Length: 283
Image (cartoon, rainbow, N blue to C red; front, side, top):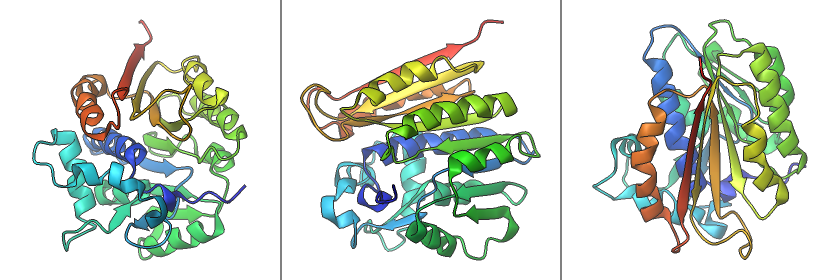
């Protein structure tokens, strides 16, 4: 199925959670001089207009990035994220929202590499345009990211962040993400993997975190932000989560401080909340 377009949801609460954590994971890799790869299995179009086209239909960004845009009390990790988004809007008003790959491009160095995959023909073409002129350090393919990932692991520098965030338009995606991570760990056990998932009124959604916890990773971190309602009574995406394999040791403590802020400012009713779990294999 290729009807999904991320432009409908650009800048919403799920993007805020996903992208500010993505930046923390990249910052962790940047602490060492050695090169790394950024691999995005479902890269989308790369950048999204918020004042025209698909994004205006539901204006989901108004309950996401807009709520942080003018705040002067942001925790440092959120402040860095918002400042990066503001860099795409130099005139001031929020009109453009960068996707995961464009945010990564702002941080990577000359020795680092990006490998981006997108199957949707229109979004793949837009992705190519948004990365024009980047040369060999950014390779883009119109391909199934689940299938393409296998051939890339392990990457030559043996350091990478792999971001997997399919649309879950096809229920098989829930099975595919578990399979992709399991295969990835076999080929590249020390890699850092970040999987995004939506909180929907679907049995597959509820089962996914438990399935991910059974993966043979030495450590994992699970964080989820629920912005409204109960799974029993509400329809639509009431929140989202990230499951990180081989996370930085400090990430849990940082999220413990930041997540209450996101609940307070992105929450839409009194049922807004967060989940934060961490596991490390004993020596």
